[in-house]
Length: 311
Length: 70
Image (cartoon, rainbow over all chains, first blue to last red; front, side):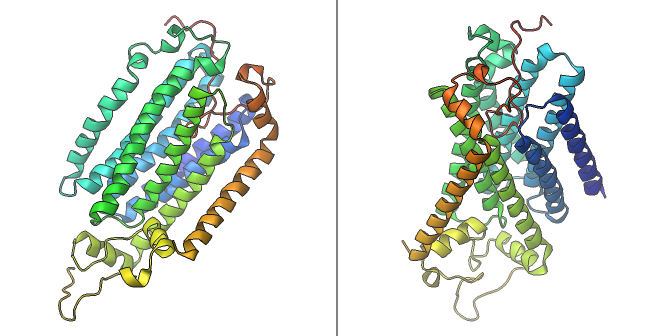
């Protein structure tokens, strides 16, 4: 019931934001509104997964928060434009950028911790993630945290958007690079150690890899050659659809009896169970390897009579 | 590398090029402005403004000349 209520609330919020934007924010690209609708859809899908998932629920809670915070911030930014103090909009935008980058880094690092530290409890994982993420975030945005009007002290002209926001984007790039390193660690560890992890979670991480890579590309182009991309939200649209696809696959998988059984098997860490699930892995295997040689079945081939399923 | 792998990579490349081409067609004027006008300040008033980022869906607000005193 809660998931439907929250989805209805979020949809209402997005609808109201789009309507208000059409009145007061005519310069917004239509793709921005499409992405807001996609965020709402992803919240619904993520909540559906949360209701079925027991082992990896915390990852999807983080994901839902990431989508939700972006929608709430969008609505608040629109309302600030109508009712608030226009002079404070820069500070508001700076905070928005800082906190969204924090949620991206947190979501990604949490998945890596969950993968690498299997024995830890969820609360410990949150604390470890915070212990990794917060120092990076605090150090990166220290000037903005000590003085929210830091952009005015850099000497860049306020008349030139591009120069004015440059310090903010260059520091955001550090956070996104940290997220990229975390994703790299995840895929390296997955290929290197190959121990059990939830089905389609690597596909979701691949979505984050695309999102963070596009973000770094934007920021790098912003910092180096003054060439601005107008295509960022189109890239986001593509990534959000991809993430939605991963969430649907995960939901379908864990909803079925066979999927639930297989998930319990890979979590049992049995040496006889293939630990290479996920769309990304299968794509790589199907395309680049001889599947007959590395076995394509769910269970690895073992001599008769040796397999003892753990249920 | 298997032939299937090459075909898959080609399909991905075609998809990316088509997607980029479509986006460029839709955003022709904005991209032209972006490439030619170094600063956003030079763009036509009222024309769509890029969010400059993939995560934040809104463009940065025009900064007032002075920060608010509070």
